[in-house]
Length: 348
Image 1 (cartoon, helix red, strand yellow):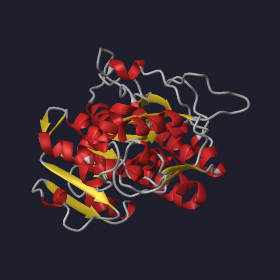
Image 2 (cartoon, rainbow, N blue to C red):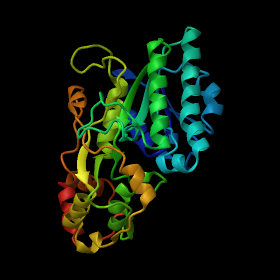
Image 3 (cartoon, rainbow, N blue to C red):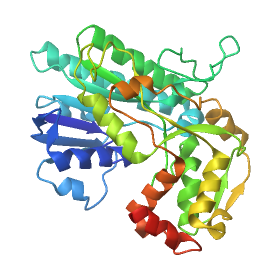
């Protein structure tokens, strides 16, 4: 199989690629070629050094001819402009999210029309497709049957792309499937421009001995998933066979990946319990209305029943998420009060 990952050197793209390179298989079949497409490729990336990997660098739309020069069996489409950037620059969001996705779908359609394989395409959508509307308030618990009424440009763009994937699938041009991702926390590395980025920053930065700002009321409840559970969900939905039996993908309805519901205040209390007062005191609460308006419009409680039928489960609690981060990123953690106990627990 020849598999393409767009955004292949981004945070989730790297982890998905690493998982596929560990097993060398996708949906039970051997992976012959893994193509990582991204606007930026880091120097001396260990992923790029793997003999199975092909790197395509540059604007995705401009590189589609190169990506489809050989038959493509599956695409995991993770490339996207993030929420705050889309709100700040409408044209950027439309070009990077909607136009690029449409061009990718057209390239896949052209391949199948020419007698090539029908591409299995996983589109990574977002909890941001949901939002309250005066005429249609969000229910207390959201499911795939809840009508999306996004309140941000990013959410609208993701919802538009969901519908494009569904239509191209209905017409038989691709075998599309959509995974709606919860906010991923704790993300390692540098902060990004996502409105939800603080949900990693208020843990990641203090653990590194750095100050962090919480830009929302700590009472705000959010829906989270750890990186490990998110990557597992992406690959699970991508590999699912179609059908109506248990563990099969029925219809074109998106799959909401399972969510852990937690308040920001609970996140901060967990940080204090795991890492100590000196770490937790590095967080300052300073509300930013623009951030609060975006993140606060997203639902916090999800019905995880459909994901459960597909073998997916939410993180059990936020402490397990923090300890997972500690176990996997000891090099990014500074020795501060209380952390020794946290590290020992994380390693058990």
